[in-house]
Image 1 (cartoon, protein in one colour):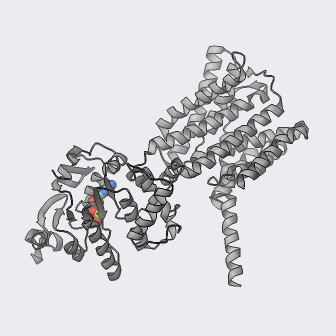
Image 2 (tube, each protein chain N blue to C red):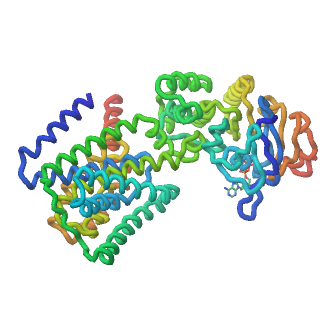
Image 3 (cartoon, chains in turn blue, orange):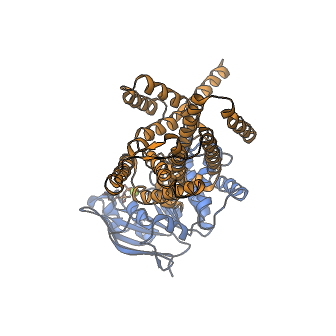
Length: 241
Length: 305
Ligand SMILES: Nc1ncnc2c1ncn2[C@@H]1O[C@H](COP(=O)(O)OP(=O)(O)OP(=O)(O)O)[C@@H](O)[C@H]1O
Ligand SMILES: [Mg+2]
């Protein structure tokens, strides 16, 4: 049975159809890339999976159970965690408290000394060792992204949704970021990642789904999908195909 | 350490009625009353940054409950009834309003207080056919003072506990970013409702305890919106996210408003409004936070010198 299943998922904003009859399934342990040109509906799809946006029609299921009727906090408790395309820190909290917030309200909550120990390990994992007491509002962009990832991982998700987590990093940071996600993959967590950085997609994803104007354009092994004529046309325009 | 100092302060404050006359004691009651209201207001509004103007709705409900029930049952039971009524109203109001955000919440809570006042007035005029009630309870000002002091101590202890408990963290996360809160599994409505209700019960009790002071009670007195505005200004001046902030704001502002209403009864509301604006713009996090910032800057300067 697949971990995540989208069946005929559609989202309309007034007259605009942002996601149009999207159907795909992801198996446990896979790392899948969700690609597509700007405005093709990738973020909207993630928003529906995490429960941030209600669907116009269709269903989303996790481990065979429908989750698309639930709110984000119930979906989080079922094992879905995410980062946001525009980083969402909790600015008035410290870095440690940001992670604690995830530990304290997850399905099997941690608090007190147990949580403290876990916070240290999670921060170290993303390269923020020793930064626990820093104010989140003082962090650099890359560190905010790291903190947001640590917060998502603190919920011990089955499915991790990453929305352009590697965007805006310099080459060294990108290298470190890819290594970090590779380690996550190896730990067995299922990842659906939206990404424009093609080197990262090639390095991380065995399989890719490509969207165009809200609909699925391609779905298959990364190498095949990235050399697909229709995909190249969607990304670069007709002249290049 | 802070517990010890607080306990000593509590004992010292409890002794005040033995040493002062009626007028200072009255001021003390006023300060404690607003100290309780501002601290209770900040319980919910501090971390969430939801500006509630419903304070007087609960305050008035407390006072009116005492006026209606005082002759029917023993005083402790009257207080309990007041707290329960406050709780029920808070839950209903909370369920209706807590999905609103920003200015809509402010306006709705203000409207709510007016609605409660109109309902009570309507009921009194058309059903009981009396506007206004007399409260004759054998409760002297020193007893009111002690009860308020007790309520203040309990409220501060609650605020202290909440600031270290999970629910306090949940509320701060919601205040920072409700989207993140919900994605971390925090039940937003449940959390906000719990704190809003707790804060409302304390406000209701503050009104109930002070009811015997007035002897005569009518809707325009106990549902006066100025109470809500004063509470907000006091909490904001002192700093709504610090344990003693709201109380610290209540002391000078209560004394200032006593003086203003005695000497400038006609310009009182204008001054109140201007002060409100000044505080919101100049000290959005309260004097304590501003002081911290100032102290940090001094320290930096010293370090550099
Ligand atoms: N809340 C919203 N209200 C109205 N329109 C929206 C909303 N969110 C997204 N859209 C529109 O839906 C379409 C898809 O947007 P979406 O953010 O999902 O694209 P995307 O594939 O993530 O793009 P990008 O690569 O630029 O992040 C766009 O046309 C966008 O303007
Ligand atoms: Mg996007």
